[in-house]
Structure formats: C-alpha cells, structure tokens
Length: 146
View 1 (cartoon, rainbow, N blue to C red):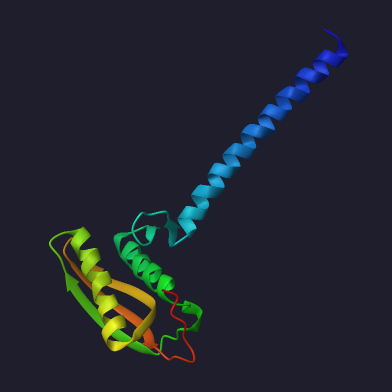
View 2 (tube, rainbow, N blue to C red):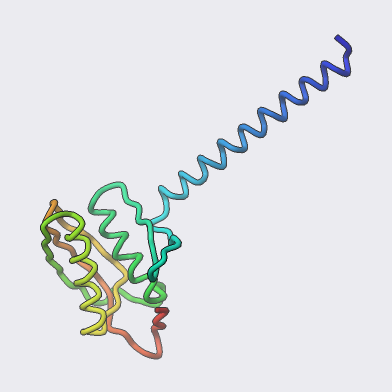
C-alpha cells in the first residue's frame, strides 16, 4: 500500500472519529442543558407552551411555578420579602398541578402579588403544601411581560 493512500485512510478515519465525537458531545450538551434548565419555551398553537424539568415531583412543581412567574415578569426585580403558605388538592397529579398554578395566578391577579421563590414542602398524588416568597407588584419597580 502506498504511503499516500495509507495517510489518506488514516486521515479519513480520524475525521470520522472526530465527527462522531462532535455529535456525541452535542447530544450530551443538549441533555446536560435540559437537566440544568428549569423549563424551556416550546411552540404551541394556543398561547405559550413550556416543557418543565425536575428531578423529583417537588422540583417539577416548583419549576412549573417558577416558569409561570418568569413568563409574567422579570424575576430579578422581585424580592422575597413576604412568605405565603399554600395548600391545594386535586384528584390526580395533573389536576394538582393545574390547581397549584391556578392558586398562584389567583394571588397574582386578585392580590397583585409576584413570586420568585417556590418551595414545595410536601406533595402526594393529590395534595400539595408549599411556601412561596415574593412581594406586591409595584408599578415603578416591576414590569409585567405578559
């Protein structure tokens, strides 16, 4: 075998290995990013869609609440000066999530509150108790995004 042909084969093999490694690193990077992210916005025909991530049911519900208020306002401007205890129930996990987010939206809409910290203390298939921190909306401090 000629030296040039051998070098060419080695170079092609090396390029193939590098390309495969780049693909694996890209996939690993995407997985790592998803593991680190609380949520991502997704295309949805309705209003806004989100994929929420968490390593436990508690974290998932906490991140869903975070996503809700991150979409509503700039959370870096919200201080956790007031603490609220929240308890909700539902017939299953799906309804529990809806009731949890609905309760937070109620507090936002009716009592003009913004939250930036969500700690789910206890959760079962149909009960949730949590502590949330935030403050009242102030027009010269907070911006409502949506």
